[in-house]
Image (cartoon, rainbow, N blue to C red; front, side, top):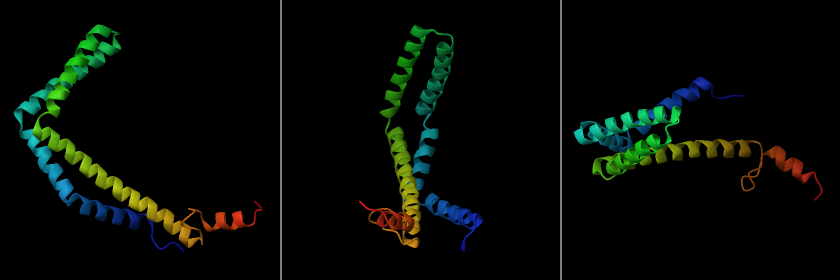
Length: 142
């Protein structure tokens, strides 16, 4: 009955992943990510933020509320400064684009599998019911 094995599906998924990795969205992401790593100011700000985040964890662990609040304010300030840098904005936009593409692909797969199950069981696509649901609801009095 089964036409494909899990291995067949995983192989096709790997092929699809390679196609996705060669899209304009992923290429843009790679360029933006490279620019982030080449930008000294951004690297320094990220390093500073990581250090502050470690401090924040320690302050939180030891219940140092005021110190934690001050460190969190510094982190927020650095985040805002980072968000104003064009290369960071481009990087974040590219992350959204790639994520959107992955969500579209996941949705297309999920919806198609669901539709195929409904159709192959003689179900009703408009109601989203499999054949068994359709047969059971028509046997019941309303």
